[in-house]
Length: 625
Image 1 (spheres, rainbow, N blue to C red):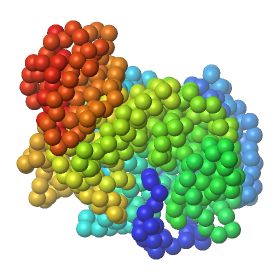
Image 2: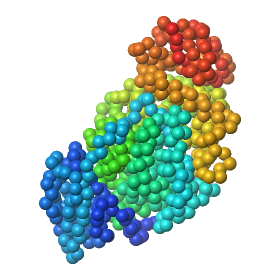
Image 3: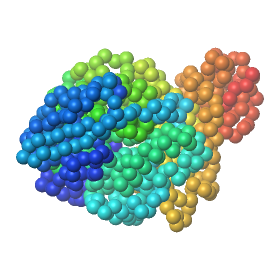
Image 4: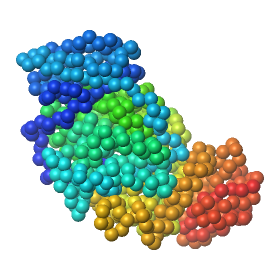
């Protein structure tokens, strides 16, 4: 998520009356056999986890005044309890030893009223297709579930939710897209050449306004019922894997929605950051690593609320930190997802971020993790990924990669004006020395918070093809925003304009781009598909080394190559005039090759020493000996 647009903030503020005095939300049905009126998070757990400690957050009226006990269970011990400020909560600490077996733990809470709860310990899933992670060979398709396709109209309106209607003519209302709608189009993703799907958050967002975007969670353990159920999400991941598609889950660590059940009935006041009066973040991450910065600026960035309806979670509270970490361990083990995209990564408590990365990485070393670090410089972006920089204020990131905003900005800057500046793209890649491994970054052209790429570049189709060529041939794991491949357009003023429904995702749509794509929309899809599928069958574009040459006279050239002797040249003329390029400048990469084939058009490049590149044209050339 980006810094909130002021118009959108006003809409949120008007729509979401303060929930501070609202009644507590009715908790969802527990996943295990339980006494009515009692909820325990995590909803179940597993034997054989690397960390044997398990923190249970128990919620029931007056449970905090009760004494908890655990019936004898081999390998499991009750290590103590902790009372919280709110008597409706109790923390129970368990140790799940290596000898513990799957089964039901019998918990008793004895107070004014005795409550019994049967808590399930499960066996871990050993399916080798689960949690595969991501590599540079992958191509991520990002989408907004509510706006992509409606596969199950029966879940469009769910009784009891705070936004109980569908209105496709409103950019703030729900439109009805869901998990089944995404699954119905697995074949479309594969035709395009995508290998991974990244939906924006699919957990419950029971907010009264603009809940479709998913970034204001109201229940950490429940899929939003308008997308499907927890069981349906588990099946969704399994079915995607069976189709050769990976799944990235979009998660939010920094904040929850103001109708989250733990905010409506807080375990304790210090579970959230609060100021005497409502205080926003200053949205300035420079405060975190400014050697001359003030503590006040640092506090405002980390502790201020992201928006009026998004309470800032106090991750410096050890109980909160553990709650959040366990929740995201739970999702991986429950579903077998392949990666986490982490929203608003820099805004979370730095020490918590290190603990989170360590815990997730220790348990699931293959799981991909990349964060949103929407920053203005290469160094600032690199600060939030694993890097060669020294710790600052005690923070040393262990996040494998980040969304590569620097690449995104550089591509747009190069293409949105006539004879655009290519130096930013060159410099963005030159700064890869800052990272432990820049190939784990995720380059992209646009997303749900940004003006659509095709509009940014003036709806110039040749420039579109250049941007796609760069995206799919640079280092890293590329990400495409839904609809970019069919030239969906608009500017993010407000954001809803770049979150429109995908044509054909709803019965009765006049256009169905899943089936037929007329005119340039079809040409665009074919270009992306041809290059993406070529990339899948030619690992030199995903695992090969990269060598770039300093841009000259509006032409930018780089190579992907490997030790097996394969080499692909990417050369782009970013000017309005045709260019004659002296190819001998690239001899250290082209020596030994006599010609090439432009992989999308199939055209032969017979002379590598003199390259005549048309105006606003990018070639992806497989070199031949």
